[in-house]
Image (tube, rainbow, N blue to C red; front, side, top):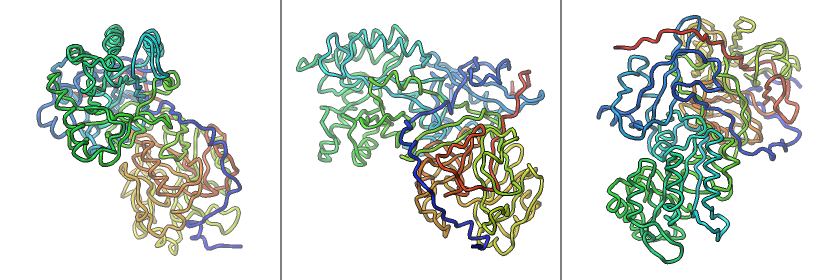
Length: 615
């Protein structure tokens, strides 16, 4: 049967079977956000090795205005700036952090960054509280939860001093960098890069073992940690021995130690308390700790991890800046958390497992108006918002408009493309049709093909994809202006590729709601989905869902996976991702005539290039 060409844009295909192999996937994260340490280029960025680097600057010394308008960056972060050059020309630079001396210093980074790239303030500004920044979603920071450290175990979660020191040695041996709660929160708020392989250590309940065993070992290794204290236990002898106020004051005065509130009496479930009792547990704990320790208490740790919207509202009203929880059912890194009010932690028994996954994420790049087409192409499998995802990130995006319909892996065969996903919608008039719905331009052919004028009103305001050698734009399709190459180039000069997609899944970091899809047929159906877009590290990303999902839920998952902008491509039976010549699908997709592909990153020169800065 022949169908009108425009019906392909709303086509709802069938699939033979579910992708059972996704049941075997566990939450992993490849190094999506790998950083160079100050004055050292990481092994994952060898293509930048040998470049000159600007001096290390401390991120203290913000003016009062800057600190008010932009979330202040901690004085204990150092940042190194590495120029990125090609053929002797400066492309921009990338920034990496290291953990410096925790004592305050007076260097002023704003005066250094301003002449290099005024956009640095925008890049490092915090989202409205309590949102987690999309760039932070690209990292994997395990927050490890301990309870008592005791000479002889009494319950399964007890840890002996020997076992705890072995854990610190494991952290040291594997090159992890323990960071403080302040540094974690700043990262989650602003997306500021973290050192490679960060980790956070936390200890609940204020046991005597924390002072007797943990604190000396932290000083020995120079590792920061946080201690969640509930005042009713301090100095008591009932049950297990507790830390005293004198001991707490000594610990709290050390820059390695952060004290957090754990309520007043450690109720079994804060959700069960009446409003006044809840307020007392949250407010009195904070005020008592601040009075006894003579320092602000900014963070809260939920007893037993139990909380709800009412408890979270109480946390905000009490003046806390972030709160930590726990989840016995799944392992969730800090970036997987719902918000700054529910930062997830992982039990200490899983330390060896999560150490291998810990990662600070990709470097922060400053390339002016260009995107980062210089990052290596990497494949990632992960689950976000309970939606399994497979996607490739990095490289330079192009499109390929084939002469007929093929498997995605067949279309990129013989090209340098590392990864590709099925692209725009096409006509179903014949099995060999390569006629697209809407105008199309592919640098592979160099040929602009206008869309059928009768079909154009049907795709008005759908995402028009525009690509040139430096960047990507997604704009609403205007039939009166965008059916010519000149009209498209008025939106993006130097155009190399263009096509019309289905709808926005994520726009400016926000997942799109059902109303945004208008009359798009099947957007709310559970089916395989394909997408492409740009993440918060300015990298091109192509990928698919690992199982059936509707468009709204798909957008939510992609936003939680670190996509800044994402658009939906041809989906259902056409959804297909190929990586290094192999299909990533557990079924045979429908052949397609069009793909979005990722080429290897353009080579970067290792010679020095000049980056101008004011004296």
